Image (tube, rainbow, N blue to C red; front, side, top):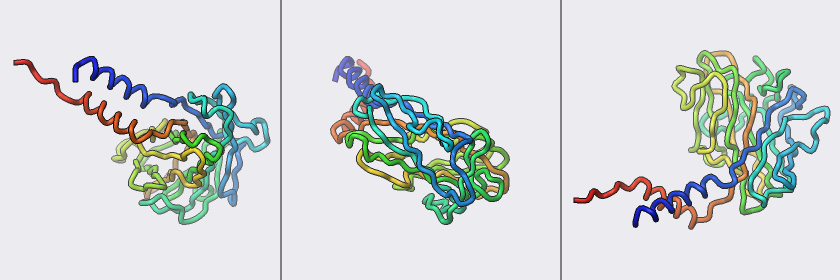
Length: 255
């Protein structure tokens, strides 16, 4: 294959991978639902005719998230969906499964935690994240692309686990914890974990976010980011593999 054809294939692959990846940002608010027995909370959300995400209940007494951002694919315009969180007071650290209910807590600024102990996310506490994509075009899917944290310090660390495929996970924690991602606060990119809800489905447990078995202290979860992406066709996946291989293929030296 000549150089021009290799470049065309690579550019097409990159264009395919980057399509439909505008981001919806859900920033937790202090007005959101919480309580010792408030174990779960579902937030209805919408996308308007221009692709902008918004909360149809904005301004209500219990507004859970400040919603911003947009989507790129017109097939997702004028769509309603919902995002849910479920508190966990105890968790299976291998699978991310809930072992006991935990009340949802929100600090005055909206930072999320779990009731009991410090009201932050303590060791073996966390949240399950769900998405109802029933009304989304079946050729598209929602994907959780990022989770933002605050107040990670000391030996505080945790994990994010794909609940439909627990083999896909990553760890995060304060500096020096040996986690996959080390930070005191900031956004953790989870696009590689395939935390998805295909159009036409409703998945109550897409992902599990929780504290590990650390000694003391707690952290907070402040924001979630979502994308709507096309479900790749098998032929597209094969093409991506071919194009990636061409990019990596060494050029033969002329004698």
